[in-house]
Length: 238
Image (cartoon, rainbow, N blue to C red):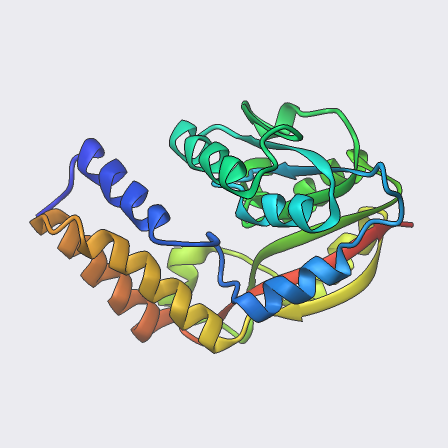
């Protein structure tokens, strides 16, 4: 049963609401990244472009006592982010902006861009833009999809052209960064992410939502599990 636009939006909102991070990111890796993203200056400012519900930005600011900005166009995600900021007690120093992240031009010391390179139409353009808003001596956390191994035609039909981890690192250096850390999400992180994403949709319980959940499960388990990966790069301007 095809879903109309409102039904799809409801399903995707439900999927997002079931996630802590809208990426294949487990708590051990999140803790490790927080350590790696410790700023060198006490007055450093953080920025998350394409922040979604802002969980990683909020944890960084909470952990390191930073002020920061999150930018996204999805109002429902930003509403969740503001509620979470209040829960963590950082609402006085972390602001969320409903805007096109590609237009943001205020540099920060610590920049996050996780799963949002698509708003610049791909990693190369995203990294060039992110270099412009990462202050000298600062840090960028860049997370994006990659191929872990050669995809078949069905997988490429879904995801199109993507680099591998080495290709993403080369794109980062070409954009003017040095690579401080490079890693990929584990299969377990992917399994949890995909399962939690589908669980949110299952709770909608309409025929269209269940069709979407079934299709996503078949695609993940039958087409791209172990083929599509997610790269985590900690970068600094050269």
